[in-house]
Length: 232
Image (cartoon, rainbow, N blue to C red; front, side):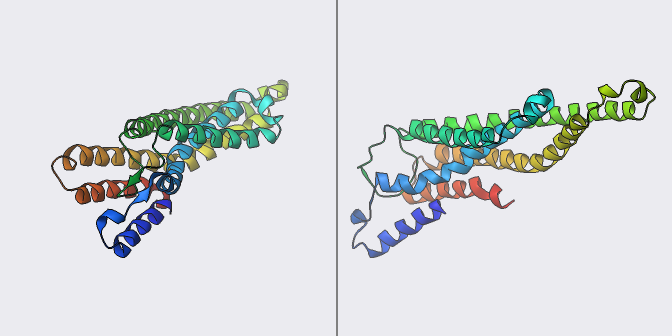
């Protein structure tokens, strides 16, 4: 929505201005519209990491996990938002906020390398957490098979203390959570990878020797791909 608002403001300025020189927007207003567009990129990847860590705690530190208070969840949300805020500050901290631009774009000469590095980091984070999800799913299935075999054997009658209902519950939770999260993170990673290919291609090829209108339109088209995973 923030990207759509920025586009509509730009079109409105072009239509009401008597000349193109007057259809400009100050940098801080542009960033106010553009920065919210980074929230799904950064926060979705961090949320994937937090879910993976939560499942790891439930798997390897069962007693601590079950006795953890709810405020840990609130603290995790606060930490996620804090990381997002600091990351955005790192990307745009040296921007000239009072410079006028002919077009409302998030990327500038100073922020472009940091934005691209952010995309690479988030893609690597998603890929690593996806591999970790597979590992947790494999480990949970292995433990569940062993536990089911133990529960149906004669050893359960002689050693009942080795069977814990809470552990069986968490093993099933790992299986269900991974099954729910995996389609989302797979779509996120694939769309992210597609976006990186498109935006890199457009910036390296179309950006050389073409008009600003064609270049800007191409880059904005790549931005649309970046958000398409929300509707998948």
